[in-house]
Image (cartoon, rainbow, N blue to C red; front, side, top):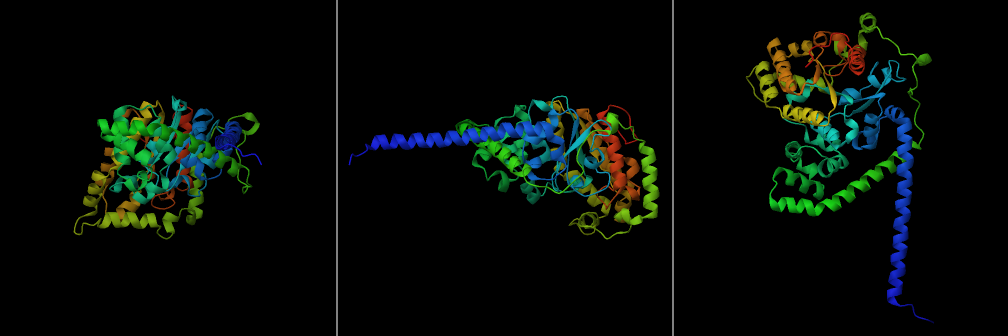
Length: 422
């Protein structure tokens, strides 16, 4: 029997390995191209179902920015709490000429949103975008580490670190805050090294980051291709029926009488007070957390106003908000910041005075003003028990107020009175 040379056998194995890799690459490319086309055609349909790739991926968010008929909306738990008139339901079918694309999850705050926006590309330029803020974010020392770990995206982090073209100082400031969560960003040696290189740009750190860059880019490419595979896997599965986006009736845009809708909801809530559980229902975990903060906050003997001022004055969320606004300015995003109103009735039940509430809004205006950001604060909602589902989340009436603000923002017209604009 003739013996096969060792070198020949190795060459054969190398060719087989190369052929296998080529087959995988062709398959991934086919999935990528197919899903890219599907996403372009059905972006709004992806919005009607909550699933991870909307939050931790990039493909859907990029296409939401590229589609001029969609308004990307970033936020937190208010975007996931079931409620009548929530934007994705209200604007399904584009009744006023556009739809929304909601990107939010409980515990997702300014630093996470800033990282998401920083990882996007040129499709953001000149596009309108909405960011929801919750006053509660600014009453904690910093974003909860567990919440950060749940919401941080390694893919978005890698693209921010290795591919974004942000100003070096802005990158450094974002990197510094991300490194405050070492148990999350430290899970990636490549990302951790890049962030440390931004924060302390010494020659050794830069050399390490440069040496790791090819591996990081390869890893990012693989992550992006796997995102398309997961999207395809999700798309082919059956899903429960939900209201799907379509076209406005007869192709005509609906002109909504927002004031009339608000009056009807007030009458409905007066007949059925349970529709706004804040008025009559049991306290939620959000209520209990705010109550504990206002009453003692670990400083027995101090007043609720003192506790509020201390919490509001030392929170790192103000730094993160400024990072978010800087990213939006650099990427030329036309931003509407929707600050959910402080629930004044609930706050006063905990002993807070109007002075504390004014303190929060003064600081918010002070931080936002240099960036010429459109800011809406809904002062009419502060004392309106019908505005809230609990002490934090909007009711169906609250959502109508938000929907009116977003509709006015998208169409560049004045809406109902939503507060300050900067």
